Length: 318
Image (cartoon, rainbow, N blue to C red):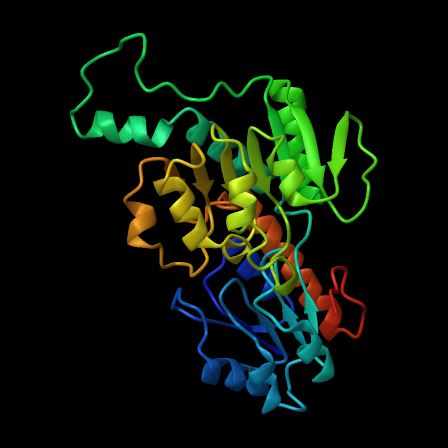
């Protein structure tokens, strides 16, 4: 029976499905694999089910020119932590789990939109600290979301899911930046540059993939282009945002607020960011629901099964 490594503990249903086809080993640690562990895994297992943080870089593959491992079935849609080209050159297929994460991630985006715009995190801290003096007409005034303009950076599956929720649920106008025009069942305007969008949107939601092309896409010039009352929401990858520039913009009141589920050097979150009241910080909860994680895991197992059976995996990315 082929041997497979699960780099984290996945839901029981996922493990049970994998055990139908493979001899499965599960790491007890919740931290990412180290370089030596990744190299060892490539040599010892027929397939690996890695996830966020397991940085299978070109350096890792450099010393494993003919690895035993034939597939990295990534648990997650984003795979910028894996050098897919280096993997392909070493004969290792890379797959991901698109679709399974779409609605859950869009729901977290809406959570952050509402929490940031209506100052929900700040309000909860006020109540928990025992400092709430009672309701009054000008208490904690936030941004009314209904009818505002939402700007979507990256109109893929997740971007469209966020846009639909904003448009049909909150009557929001939709503007977006994407490499190509999208055929949508609601009105939306496409801009050529992120800065143009920034000047029009009341709320900006980042939904682009991670990687070199989008690294620091949201930088100081972009933030300077945003409207002073606007909010920035990131459910993509942390390094899409220049975190230092965002901190300066929030500290200076250049934008009204931000809602983040991901961070540039995750899980490290700068003290300066944690000290700010006008930012909502979540611990990467985008897909944190059992049925969603099960769906992701079952998709990853099917990718493993197909690849190791000599079939083309359903979600091959390289």
